[in-house]
Image (cartoon, rainbow, N blue to C red; front, side, top):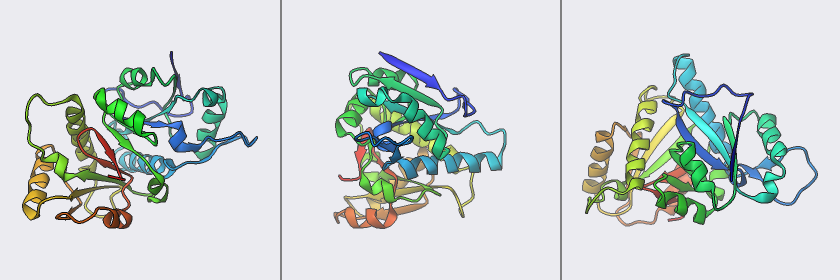
Length: 261
């Protein structure tokens, strides 16, 4: 069973234009043992939501009539947390987070909730959840502890160039279509800002190959309408060191991505 509650404290986004991002409550809040408090503590996805909100604020500063905005949905699948739905809702209110809808579902039905709400990006700390969503055509990324130390004033999105230039060997899978669609929307958002002091930064990294591979990935992203702020060709070097410096909020390829890969 899936239950969705609209947040009346937040102005609802244009359903035809907004970029819908779903985040699990386990990622946003520290929903462990009940400590008796009125609100949950901040989880690893907290800076990410603040960064999404900052992008929206800047877009509206540039154009008060802007409708291409992030629409955040909070997904709760844990039965214990669902019994504390009022605490989850009051926690978002306490922190001033712009969550448009709260969705409560079982582990079995959470995919239905993503599809029903037209989610374009699903973010979770649970690898199994992210993989299941990707298999159903929902672009997904796995969050980890690194996300907790990412900047909250700028959204930093990293693209895996090796996946971007992967040759097509048959019909395009739904997850890749979703990745291309999301990157196009992200490109439109990035185009609203100047090169300097943008609240949204796009980073490209290719793990294999040299400058030619990186150049091919750049051209592929530009063909989707996405300009890149920074590009790095690792040529086989490990990705960990550069991730610690760039601190992206999440990594995207063609369906499911993890900063640990």
